[in-house]
Image (cartoon, rainbow, N blue to C red; front, side, top):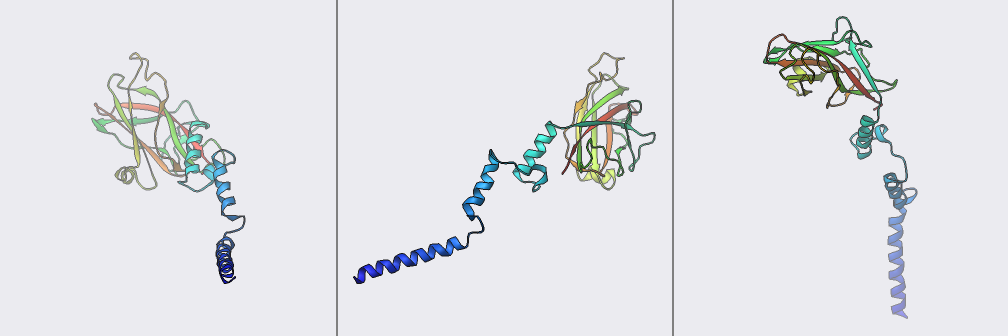
Length: 219
């Protein structure tokens, strides 16, 4: 009999220990919470760009939006500067002038007061494509650089806030740059971030004219 009472006491103690653990589980229980998250793999919506930045769902949403997005194209205002640079035009491209086998002067292509995004409410953007419409040198390759930042272009270059692209005319000389958009890979930036552009040719003061198209993101 004493042995049986001991076993009962031990069983009760074990049950009480389990109860301490289960009482500590938040509303719905841990299993319900885990299920709610794992359902997001294939059975529930995720927050995407509205969720936590740098989470898996956020990056998946960012990638999906990059490939399935709207695009808006821009030319230049009459005198682009770091406040206002863009205009919805097909008659006034941006114009960059090369250095002599080095970078030419950085020109402003998006200012702090510009909103290049396709949709109201977008807070971030990136340049998706360029279309080069005129090249002084249609034979030799060019390097071009897009720079982004909130200070000066020199500061942004030092901080490595830039991306480079190689450009070469694929047209018969005399037919300019062929009119084919060029894909751009760059970081997303906040609306209000300044953008600059530089070109590099093996000859000084060569002109490269272009337009650019943007993707927008809500977060």
